[in-house]
Structure formats: C-alpha cells, structure tokens
Length: 300
Image 1 (cartoon, rainbow, N blue to C red):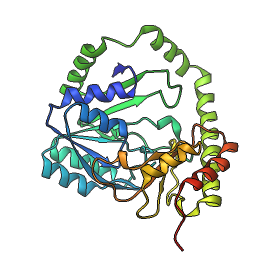
Image 2: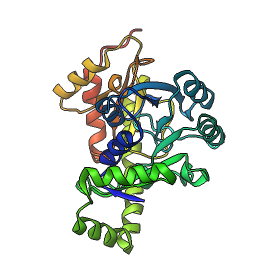
Image 3: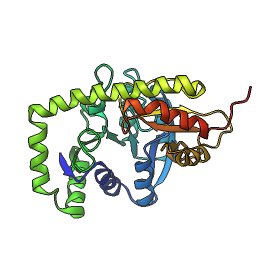
Image 4: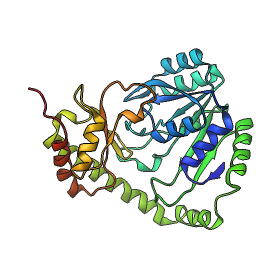
C-alpha cells in the first residue's frame, strides 16, 4: 500500500507509472471526468468500452483488449461517477478473466465505498484477484472531507514497485501530521458514527431529489436509482443540448453538470449529472423547479 495525496494524485501517478505517451487506456463509457483529464495529460489514447446499469460489458471489454492491444483499464465498479452503476456479481468473474487473458491491469477506483445508501456493497474486485491484475485505489476525500487529501494505492509485484517509485518521485510522502490525524479519525468510534450518519443523510437527500424530479420533471427521472454514491444520471429528451441546459440552469441558480464531457467519444444521448450531496432535502424541490425552467418545453 502506498499513501498518496488524494485520489486524483494517486490516479495520475498510476497512469504515468504504468504507461508511456501514446499508449491506450480503456475506460467505461461514460466515466469519471478526472480520469479522462489525467489520461489526456499523460498523453494516452482513451478508448471507451460500453457499460450499462450493471457495469462494464465483459465481452466488449475483452474485444477492446484484443482490438487495441491495451494493457490498462480504468473502472469504478461501485457507484460509478457519473452513472451510479455497480458492477454486477454475474459480470465480475468475466471482467477478471478478460484481464488475465489480456495480461492487463485494472485500476479499481473505489472512491465511494463509504457512500453506501441501500444494503451492503460487494467486496472490491481486488479481493477476488489472486494474480495481481487489480490496482486498488481508495480515498477518504469524498466520505470525510474535501481537504483530507489522503488516499492509498494497493498493488502487487512489479506494478507495485513502479507505483512506489513514482510516488517517491512525485512528492516523497504525504505530510505526517495529516496522516496522523487521518489515523486517529478512522480508528475512533467517531468514524463509525460518521459513516452511519452519512448513509442516513445521503438517503434523505437522494430520495428528496427523486421526489422533486417526479413532481416537476417526471420525463427525466433516472431509470435506475443508485444504491450509493453522490449523483443521479438523468436522461434528457433526444435532441436536447445538455450543455445549454446546464448553462441556463446556472443562470437560474442551480448547478448541474452536462453529460457530454464524461464520455471519451460521442455520447449515446444527452444527460445531466445531478449531485444530491451538496444541498439539504428542503432545497431539492425549489432546485428542480428552477431546473425545469431551464429545460426546453416537452413536445406533446
């Protein structure tokens, strides 16, 4: 395990350590915007792999490895950002098999493990990987505080050695006082209380947003409700300009994110990413009412 200065720094170091400019990185489609930015900064060619509400499609992943010769796949198997999808139990063995067949690595970005709302999350993919194909990334930034820039990378064998060397080159080490404060927090009873409270609060905010969407914008209610995470991935009517909608919403005092930048290639359709974590339940109805005013009228 290598301690890093937040998840984004860990991801950037991993891409630089395991690739060369011009190499191919496979990603889910859509995928985390920060991963796309880090990949482009590293000079990588990014190739999307289709995914649905059950996660990446294993047969498409295997075909992409064969077609591109890629040796690295970035994935958020749990409450993916932006879609909220979780890789299903039925697909997990096939994804790991595709990695073994290609002799490739998977960067498992487990950013949302402490953001579960309903039920219990499945174990990380790394827990089912005896051969060291999975590089495990875990961060406390989303679940604890944005300023707690502490994350960890877990990797075995030569990949682990390269990651340790890369982190040493990047910043030597994460500040000792910050690490000590983190250890005291996550080993205290307050950490368990915080996670319980976090689950309750996220559920109330998610459900309040869903209720408001059903009242004011029933045609954009997401078809699948995520069991955790921070976002809803809402479809817009065909032909809608999601970037224009986000701009109009900001003018009306509501911050939403257009779906287009979350795709490595052309999106399959317009979407918005709605974040429910940053506003109290009491604000959701007014927020969605303002969002409705920013959307073009629906056709009869």
